[in-house]
Length: 194
Ligand SMILES: O=P(O)(O)OC[C@H]1O[C@H](O)[C@H](O)[C@@H](O)[C@@H]1O
Image 1: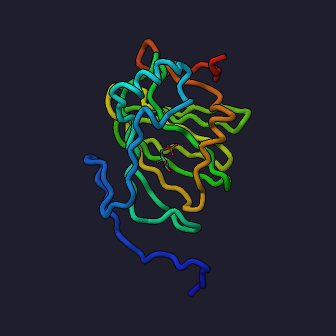
Image 2: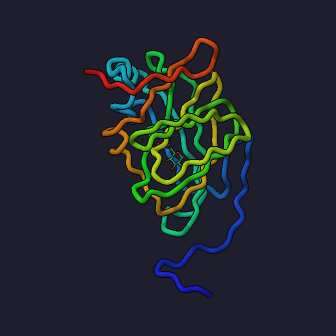
């Protein structure tokens, strides 16, 4: 048997309910409201009005108990509500893995997009139920609800990957996703308010 500096957790079964969007047993959960998304939407005034108004839940993340530590493979289900802020579709904060490690997403319900940016190149993947989106090492990633229903996806990622949110605030994501006329996302070049 190999020896580890930090002993791994025990093998375990985790019940995955694709309809209720739960993992059982459950680990940490996260609720992000509009006020948690400062500096991300282009229209700061619209963001501020929403954050200081009813401050809606934009997305939730439920996790299994597998810890975010090196060599483990945690899983989580993120559910993004439908909506937009001055036309810019509701989204996750987005982050870069400081350790440059990959991640996979499996789309579960609704309709979404996976926006990736490596500092120079931007990639967009349409995410429909059953789509596996692969995020290679070095690509910052943000998920976006492009539909009218909640968009949910399962993520599996290296426990030591980390979440660098400052990278996205500094470099942006290459594009911004707006509500398109035909129900698809209208991708526009990333700009910031002057
Ligand atoms: O961390 P955010 O950019 O807010 O994205 C929300 C979540 O998306 C996925 O589920 C990732 O695996 C999580 O690690 C992340 O927390």
